[in-house]
Length: 280
Figure 1 (cartoon, rainbow, N blue to C red):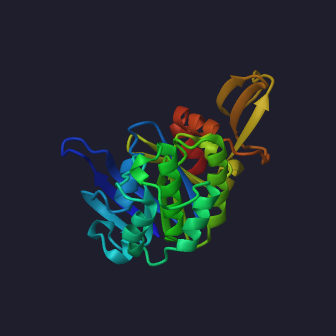
Figure 2 (figure 1 turned 135 degrees about the vertical axis):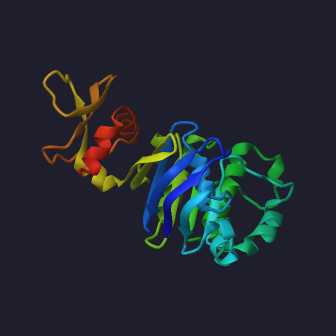
């Protein structure tokens, strides 16, 4: 559903952010998009949704060139940015103005999501609400659009702990085999139970794009008392229980994915990680 092939993009002609970047995303997954600040996460999301345009290469989203911004493509993409635009409208006025752009929008679902987030009516002026409340409204709107592609940039920022729990439950309920969900985040602990595939960007390059199942097949995530006699260690850090360790899974051991440890291991051992997942 999303295919980027050998694309180039830069905010200036002298310096490219992406050069020869290739990425393919398939339906039925919740992708976690990770990377340091400046790695290009938000830009990549904008390229996919047609808000930025590639310089070279090819891009297909739902079999369309996103740069053409055809209505039949845009009506199937819900994009929740990190920085929210909140017009001086009541919630019900916002819905009246923007819901018609999405033919599968459900007013019943939208109201249900508001109720779950404890927003009790639609007469509130959005621009007068707190950032956290605005986020809940826009999350509810994005989910109620029922699009084939759902893109969220730092969706849990400004949400309190109970709201983060609600967010995870809602996301789990709307994930289907026909939908692609992409969540860019630094708050990996908030989304650990949701994400089933990981994309890691570094310096404008995709250095990992793997399912959680494949990651735990290739790597182990363990707590060890000491690592003096351990082999195939890719990353380790101390905690109160001992050492948290990421190792190459040479013994076909089953362990639970730790996204934060994975990210640190990948950033420390880029070439080794790429060899493990793409041996040549």
